[in-house]
Image 1 (cartoon, rainbow, N blue to C red):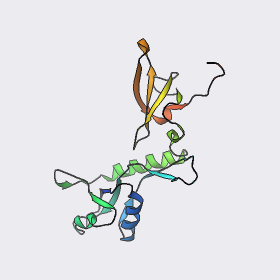
Image 2: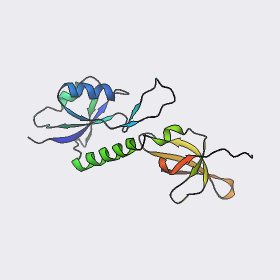
Image 3: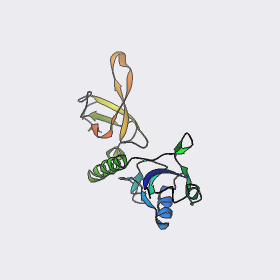
Image 4: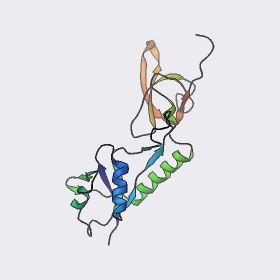
Amino acid sequence: MTLNWHVIRSKPNREEFLARELESRDVEVFYPRLVANPVNPRAHRFKSYFPGYLFIHVDLERINASAFERVPGAANLVSFGGEISAVPETIVQAIRRKVDAINAAGGEKKAALKPGDRVEIEQGPFAGYTAILDASLPGSERVRVLLRMLASRDLPVEMPADYVRLRKPSGKN
């Protein structure tokens, strides 16, 4: 018996449903989610770290892979070149640690920021600069900001979300 971690793709917005379905079939599931800080109290309190994907710990020599495609909410197992991919235990543990660290720090910090916000860059090579938040990059803890550089051109730069904070408005324009 060889248990390995594999990645299963869910149908759109069905990750949580698929996780419950798999768990009800006694399949070990790792569904990494981040604590969200929604403005609306009725909004979801968690968001998928890898939208559309979950990890399952199974022995594919014992369970036929096609059985997972018939589970409600499932699309398919991730494969490359026709071979179902296995994910090393060390990678899964690293993802667990990262997700736990983000959640322990209060969840995604970028949730409070929205495109167009003026932000102060606090870390990295652009520390001390002011920029405009362009986008929060999906499925990651990164943001894209627009830095005003030479010749008044806005340069898009990607960086970890925790490098930036909302800039407090000053009293002058």
